[in-house]
Image (tube, rainbow, N blue to C red; front, side, top):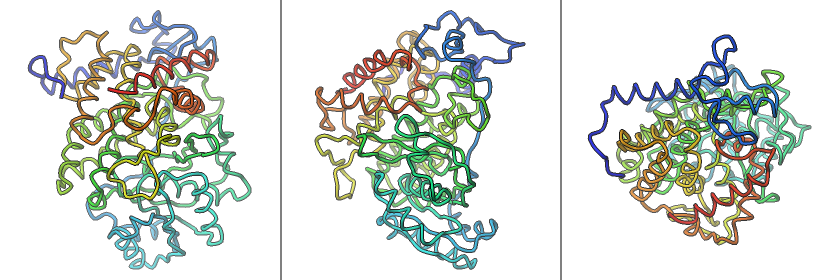
Length: 499
């Protein structure tokens, strides 16, 4: 880890500093009690750049009225060892007597599926079928095959048992079966799709996560690979949220070390990105109807609490969970951290690490196959593709809000009491690098994944369509200066080639 300069501050001092950071990063937006220059930040805004994580009157003039509210939405969550056995009662309580079970071939062989099926049978809940064809990092074709499997069954409810790929696939099955005459393209995030909201209610969906990473059991987001565009994309709307997430620590203890590490790095970046995203009050334009308010709204005081706690837990427990799969406390705490981060980023959003990760994992020009993944095809796991750019990303975003970046560095154990604000990015980047090296078996840059300088333009073009997350990136030029934004992304990818 990065060596401390002197004794770390007390817990009370850290808490006070965190509250101060949250308070002054989210000044009141009521027009009667604040102004665009609250706390002296207004003068720092640069026209044409979605830059500093503070309200911007210049952006208001460019793109309409600022947002003034944020909305918190999450699935109901039950956490505890053994809660899988309650799933039959949960469906009965929902008035459901039949379900479709969705999983993958690896999870199908684990105890969790048997436990869930027994719980359903015990309550008289029938199973119309078990789909175990979900692939790791699913592609559009995988999603369509899953939908075609479910269509003739017309299940009244769904049970997803697995990691993020399983849960996201099930969300899309639910969406498309409830909109049988609407193509998937209609719901895909723009500009790759139309980004239209669902118009019909979805069926009950209960998720039982078997990995500690995506937090998909809490969110209305579903991600998949779109090979025709050489990029990942997805659908994001609150209507896709699962009805209930059953977070049972007994179900994550079978994860291989490599999967635990990759999943945990996803939690790490969910936390860091949602904590450092532009605040909700900077997002423009304000939606004309509350139904159009995006799920990813920008950093907000409630998401902050979940994101910071998830970050601290990940730094503390992920190395332990990777070193010792039998460490029950670490495994349990990582599942809790994943769920907490899901609540945080599910409402605040993520930004550059995730936006840049989608072309990294989908393009994979050298057919990289991450060690420890028992899959038949080359794979850059999602968590690996997200974390590999993190040091470069947070060096770039730190000028937007040095205090938030220093608070993040402090979560890694860095004593920041004597660190200058202008050094916040470098200090946080070094802390992340040290963490990744200590975790082990992580590629030290894009070169280690088989990328070269000649691949950067394709990576940039695969990132540009990720508008939903890029708009939350502090410091990144917006749609009013696309070419500058491309150049910034190019520099970020080049910087991420090696650390």
